[in-house]
Every structure is written in structure tokens, then in C-alpha cells.
Image (cartoon, rainbow, N blue to C red):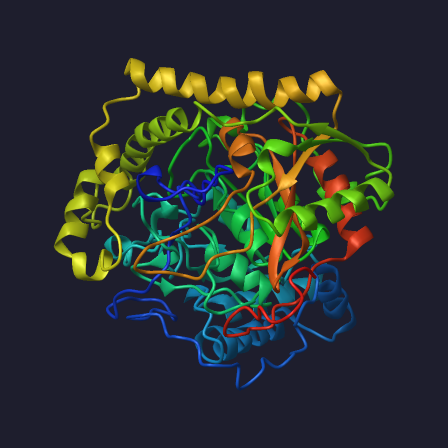
Length: 561
């Protein structure tokens, strides 16, 4: 699921640019013969300067709590919220800056909202998300009039036979699934030279802080939609970096939970070892509220049944302004030093953590990542073939693409639409892999988990008696480049992602107006502690800035803000 594998070092060419797995893939645009409200045949270039600033609407930057207060007092109805966000999508996403974050609108959203309004009057709200419009990534199944395609033209007409567990949880909570967001196609697991934020079905998503900059991937559309207030909150998915990296790049909060907290059933897969969905929001409070709705035990996903602890029912109970008081934070120094201007942002953020009561412990020699990345990639290639074949095989019989081999052949036949900018090298490498019973797979899986869990996060935290680890999420994003692909400098997503452990990114500052996030991560099921820390940091610093929808980054301004 998806996104940037960013391994804390500059990568390029054959190194797979690891960011989302990968890499932050997918950026440019594609075919005009697509469904979805924002499909483009090519990315539209930004003008020389923003000629019409985006108007501030009444829904701009509103939190879930503020929306619920408005619903309670009659300022809003669920139906008026849906209509308001749809107008904003039309004005900002399809026109205006043309962010291209939303790939498809739910045609039933207004009627769903109307019924939820009637229910609120009769019986009261079901949950804090009752009547709240939510966008979800286009690799999450819904059994309705929307499609689930992973951004691929091969699945542009695919309607699964049942909701994903995640979508069902949202509906049960009374949330309104407003539509689906664009993504790096196949969650960035197609090419070694992709451009993040691009899919054949949806085209190129653009960063709302500087329109020529990359939105990062693979949950590009979800991150951009949240940043631009096209929805209240959104859902992304991650295999390595695909939630936290675009969250960082778009100035929002992203939570990548422990694998098994949120069911993956009905989500187009990469890896059953590392895949997870997670909340993307403008605040830690909103992310925590959404996390409580998404989590749950699902017989269709064994990982959700294997929990060894009691899972909280409500994560908003951990929103503590004093959450950093007495906390021992381990600074993963090996994940610093990849960008000249990121380190000062991080040092300022760390100083804030200390002023808010944290004890900082430098870890200069841990988490190098050497001799690990090849094992992770090898394991993911094996699991992608196995898991994707299972997913495609259970789609309705009308779906013609039933295996990874079918998908490769489809892309070859439709190369002008699906591969105008980059190829499918990862697909081909995955197809060449054998079954999961092979010794090579078991060796790579064991190495990946041992390095990041037993010899990684668990050992480091126990040795230094830490409550959490901290590192820069990633650096400022590059300009989207459909010719050369992604160029990203470094980051910290890989260790928690490969371990299947939780991480949360929070805005930490800006470099020439481009957001930079700070990540807090820890051992399995440590979401309560990480939410305490992240909330205290967020509220103690208030470093998030609204996007300005500029055509390009203004390097004439002060570098660090």
C-alpha cells in the first residue's frame, strides 16, 4: 500500500528510489479515456503566478469537532457539508489551481447525507464522524457506484462485490464517503523510475503549496485533499512511506498504525507483511478520531486477530497537552543529514520537544539501513505477486485482468495510456518470483523483520529505555518531473514500515514554503503513546501553515519558516 520507500539516502536510477516503493511514484497524467471527475490527458502547467487566489470558504480548515458543533447547532447539515465540499472540489480541484486530487465522486453522497440528517434528528449521531464527509484512496474497495482501480485503466470499471472492512466501518460510524482520491498508480509499485502522484486513470496530482512540486506518494490525492480542505479527513494506505511521506510533503498529520490494527481486507495489496491503511488529517485530534473508527477485528484479515493487547476504543482520550512531559525520545541521528536545510528545522523541533518536557537521547550509530534494503525489496516482490493475484482472482468474473501476468500484458497493449512516462519494471520482477514457499522469500522476510524489529526498534528502545523515537519524516519535495522521475533526498519511514510498527508525522516547519514533517515512531501497538507525544508537539508549536496554491516555491523568501 503504497508509497514512498524513502530510505534515508539519495537514490536514483536502478536503486528504485525507494520512497514509496516505492518511490514516490506516479506523477504525470494520462489518458483522456478515463472515468473519474479529474482525469486528464496531460498535466496542466501552472501559470507564471497565481492570478486568482483561492477563496477561503466556510469549510476551510474546519476540524471534525467544529463541524460537529455546527451540525449540533444547525449551522450545517450533513447534506450541506457534502454540497459545500463538492463545490470546493469543483472550484479548487477541477478548476482554479487544478490539484487533481479527487479521482471520482460518490454519486450517492448527497442522498446518504440526507438520510443521516434524518437519523440525527430521530436518534442522534452514531459517532463523532456522523455526517462527516471523508475521502478514501482509490485502492480501497467500495461496493457502490464508484470504482476501485488503484489508478489503473485496467480496473477503471471494476466494482468489487463487497465493501472493504474499512469502508464498512466508515459507513457504520455514519461518515459520508464523498469519493475516492488519486494515487501513485498501483501504490507506487510498478516502476523503478516513476513520478509520484501520477496514475493512468487519474493523471497528475499537484502539491497545493507549490503547484509544480510533487505531492509525494502513494497516498498523494488523500494528502492533497486534506491539505486543501476538500474533505474533513481522508484515508491513505502505506507499505513504506505512503502515508507519512505525502502527509509531510503536504503539511498534514498522518498516522501509519501497527499492521493489524486496521483490516486490509478489500484493499488492493502490495504486501501482507507491511500493508496498512491509516488516517490523514489536518490535526492530530482529527487523525485520532478517525483511527478509532477505522480499527477493528476482521475475520478476513488474520493480522487483526493476532493482537496480544487490548486495543483502545477511542484514541482521542490520548490527546494530552502534557504528553511530552517526562518522555524519553531517542533521536535517530542516522536519519538526519540528508538535506542542508532540513536539519535546522529538526533541531528547532527537537528544542521544542525539550522545552515541552521531553528528555532527548542521541542515537548516533543506530538504524543505518545498510544490508537491509535489498531484503525488503525482495520480500515485497514475492508478496506483491502472491497477494495481488489473490485480490484480482476474487474480483467479479467480468473483470478481464485476473493475474499480475494479465496486468503486464494489459499495460503492454495500452502502453500509450499506461506507460507514457515510465514502465513496469517492478511488475516484471515480481512476476518472475516463485511461490512464498521458496527459501529465498523466507530468508528475505526473516532478514527484514529481524533487522527492523528484534535488532532494530525493539532493541534500541529497550537499551535506552525510550518511550519513542524521532526523526525527520522527509525533506522538501522536488519538482514533478515526468521525464526523469522522482528525486527525493532522504527520510525515516522505512524502519517502522518494514517492522510493521506505528509512526505518526506532524508538521515541523517549512523550507522555502514547502512543508517538512517530524516523525515519532515506536514499538508495536504504541499508538496511544505516539498520539500523546504528537498532540503535545503540535499544540505546543502550531507549525502547520495553510497551503498558498503558489505556482512554484518562492525561493526569494527566507528559507526556513
